[in-house]
Image (cartoon, rainbow, N blue to C red; front, side, top):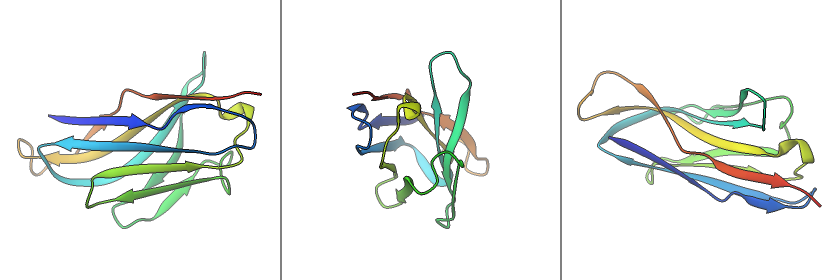
Length: 122
């Protein structure tokens, strides 16, 4: 089993910052790609940022220059530093990883966290 636990969400004023974390645990052999998604109320889940095992990053246009994705492979933890937050960043943020486990050593499956709420409001 693989567990992903997000933390760091909350209420912040426009222009403020938050740092999300996603701790990955379980019988993990290897983690490949890691991602952050977000889903605003009544809308589809959108990809926000990705980071490969080689630390190559990509961002949605709406967050470029404001958000930074990073990972600590020693801790199996994913981060999202969010600066200059805007009202439209309000959403539930989900982390997702592609991981192989002791039960499935040669296949990578995608796992999801439960989400953390980010609310930008004055």
